Length: 270
Ligand SMILES: [Zn+2]
Image (cartoon, rainbow, N blue to C red; front, top):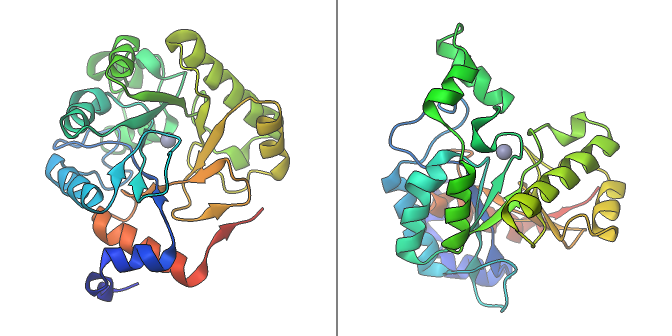
């Protein structure tokens, strides 16, 4: 899609696409991109993030999950449980009265271990680096105390697997285990009753039988993918918009997704 998207009004795209609720998600907002992420994807500065929120709040109202009415709304979420959620993101959201879901990996809370892609990013410029030292010194992940504070401020905590494997790479039994254990972790440690699970990387390649199992056995209430503005054949699998992915503004990215949805009426089938 091209630059012409700038000339199509957002309200018209919303009307023609019939889309009411959108689910944009991010990982991090930072003016000083940390070494464990800067080689992985474009990182929003505070200024860019505020601009994204200006756009979202102009056309949609911020909602908790699940949404209640049928007006244009957005539900914001953040994956990987990074410390910037506490230091930078939550204060901005509180000022604007925007709620959010923070999806965390149970193995990484309190900086006990690290996502393997972050270790790769770290080693790119500094192959000798000891990631355990880095975890101890930089504390890139949220601590339990910070998570409690976020909950007290009204934010939701969801699960994002134990240690962030690509689901299509692991057997279904292991997928279920990663889902169940990380959900149990946030219930046991933080008392989170809503069972929300965001797939690490993508739900692409996850089978129908996984979804049938987790929903029928009430292992989860809702799951979240990363496929953009799309409906899923499993109603409780919500597709979110990976706003950071191409380094475009939220305005440009979301308008492009609305136009694409309008043309193709994308449905995720398995
Ligand atoms: Zn993730």
